[in-house]
Length: 322
Ligand SMILES: NC(=O)c1ccc[n+]([C@@H]2O[C@H](COP(=O)([O-])OP(=O)(O)OC[C@H]3O[C@@H](n4cnc5c(N)ncnc54)[C@H](OP(=O)(O)O)[C@@H]3O)[C@@H](O)[C@H]2O)c1
Image (cartoon, rainbow, N blue to C red; front, side, top):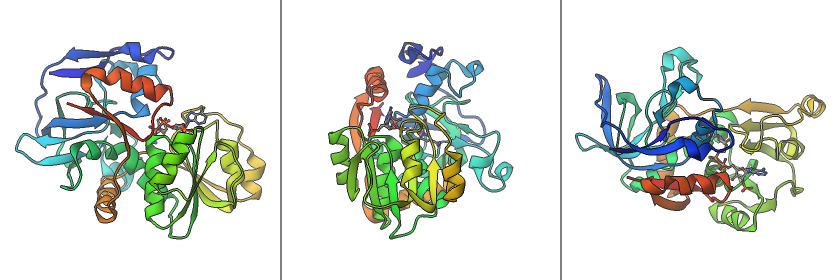
């Protein structure tokens, strides 16, 4: 079967390390199930793997792709919960299992016709969602759901700033926070993405770094260095920043004085529990929310999709069909 495989790692030229190759169709061991992948989607995580950031080189070569929607060998339509972990090892929260692995970290991922996953990772695909829509959700939307509702404890009426509106997690956070009754401000570097943020449910959209009409209770951060100082400035005293990524760099000035004097809360967030993924899917069913799909590409054109992501030329999610 055809697969997109990380065959090496190169920080300067990550896409030269991604090859389309024929690989054997996997067999499911006991307790695992084989899924015919119908759609997958791109995440920055794949680019970090190809750059050699946060991914052990001993796990190369590996099939990339953290998001999967497909059909099991016995015909069940599923979304794959993408974290392979033991909830007991994380005191009931599998994202806290020190040995957890996202699909494509230690087990082959979803940019292939077939994937095998632990049975507990199978989640019924809501009938109302297409395979393309469902493939946008496990990583970006579940991450946004955990950031907003579990980590920040978002309530209706809260004021939220989402930085970098064009990103997969950010666009999901705008839609989810708005549907939950929050007042949502979004920032983006481009007018087109600010417009999209409004369409997704943001109440107002601003240029990156602009002054907001009022301070916010919660900031959703995935941009990192480029927006961190602004995120700190925009919080009300006692407000919360939840950070799940740092696309523009991981080492901004800490501004410790502001953090302790304003009593700010800074929370990391990674992935989601299986329960949070199920809850996020239910929220899409009950609200009618759908992910914004930037484009749909066949596997053969996956490099083109990643180049757009690296260039920042993406609004929402890029889907790969198989
Ligand atoms: N912890 C987790 O579980 C988890 C899960 C998913 C993703 N992540 C991480 O979260 C980050 C976001 O991932 P993603 O897939 O949602 O999208 P992404 O494509 O990395 O988008 C992030 C957004 O950041 C903004 N941005 C990037 N560079 C910038 C710069 N130099 N200055 C200002 N803004 C900049 C862009 O927004 P505009 O173009 O709109 O300005 C971009 O759309 C990544 O680092 C990813 O690895 C973590």
